[in-house]
Image: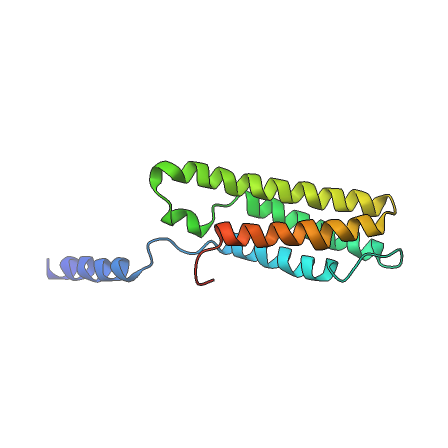
Length: 140
């Protein structure tokens, strides 16, 4: 009888010491890939590097699709009754970002490299900044 009680107490201590919600590593990895891709794309798209730019946009888009299926860690700090709307807003923001990325991809495919550059440097970069301001947990 003493042993099961000891195991129960040890398990209770371990559970109490564990974080309530683990960080969302899938989302973090996707965001890291998106950031790396955007950094590469912001160097500019030209006729000479457009194939590499399309490849980088594909990485960005794949990471974005992964990210939009996740729930940001910051949602845990939102009131329960408002959390659904917060999560929907997160997803819609990433859908809007995907549309911009697809517009940039279309511009590259059409040989409109300056248009693609404008979308990447201005709109995608602004979207990243706005999204981080709204959804990124404090301290990260």
